[in-house]
Structure formats: structure tokens, C-alpha cells
Image (cartoon, rainbow, N blue to C red; front, top):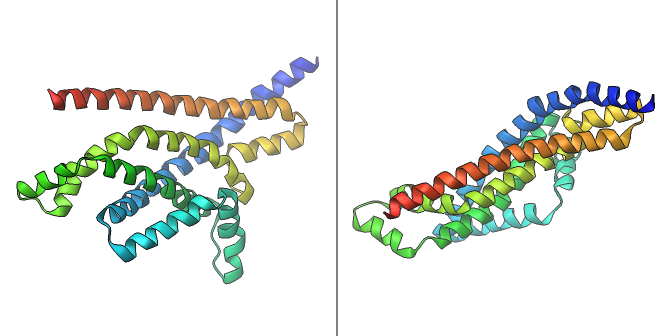
Length: 226
């Protein structure tokens, strides 16, 4: 009887948890990661170009966001900023924090990938009449992004799981919905395992997509060499 009751709770809660996963968790991850990549590429290119003042600003940004906990950053933006008159809704606050936090990590990934490209590639671009920006866009950056692809994919998968922290600033994503169901049903073990499996499902799909992307890049590299 108890098992039947538990099975009923799990069956009923599955869609209640999955729906905010599809409508909140995934969009939050997609928007924040897209912005993070934009921030990361900009910061990495500035560091690669060695523009002194801007490079120091980028290093400071990376130092701060890599050196402080993501949860603290969420609390500062959502609960702290209203003290100075800046009120941000939960979802936009989560997007801002996740994009800035992930951008700092991805900037270092892309910077390392840029530095792994042989210096002769930049010189080759100049030799055929390309400007610095053209050489970076057409030659250096595509090679660097192929190198960075596995690490960036891992960062995306990690972000999907980290979105559970957004529940702490009242974003109604999967983990918050699960907490509400637990408060009503008093079945924490089964329900937290269930939401964990849904996160695992999302991560597995992204891992498969990562593997497919890496295979395509390997084929492209082989064709380019031949």
C-alpha cells in the first residue's frame, strides 16, 4: 500500500518537475550560456591582444567571479542590489549571475585555446593581406573554438546542474518545484532522487550532443589536413 502510494506520488510529480525543467531550467541555461560565450570570447580576445588596461580589467573580472561562490553572487544581485535601489526580477537576476560567472570560466578556456594556435597562423593572415581582426575572425578564432569545444561543452553541462541554485532566489525551476512537492508529501528521498534523475537525463542528452559535435569536428580536421 505504501509502495503504491509512493509510486502515485512519483508518477504525479514527474511531469510537474519536468515541465519547469523544459520551460525554465533549459531556457535559463541556454540564455545564460549564450551570453557567457559572448563575454568569454570578448575577454579572451582582449587578453590575447595584450591591451594593458583592458587586460587588467578582464583579469580582475575573472579573478572576482572565479574566486567567489556562485550562491553568494546570486544573493548579492538578488537580495543585495535592492539595498542600493536596483531591483531585478528572479529570472533576469539568475541570467545575469550565471552568464557573468560562466563567462569568467569560459574566458580562461578560450584564452588558453587561442594561445595554443601556432603564432605562424597570425603571420600567415598578415601575409595574405588580412587585417588583425580579419585574421582573428577567419583563422585564429575558428581553430581556437575547435580546441575549446570539449571544455566549453563540459561547462554547459555543469551549468545545467548549477541552475538548481536559482531556487535560492525564488526562480521556479525544477529543484524549487521538487522542494514544494516534498513539503507537501513528506517523501524527500524518492523525490530528490527523481529530480536528480531528470538532471541526469538532461546531462546525458547534452553529453551525446557533445560527442556528436566532437566527431564532426574530427572529420572536419581530417578533411582539412588531407
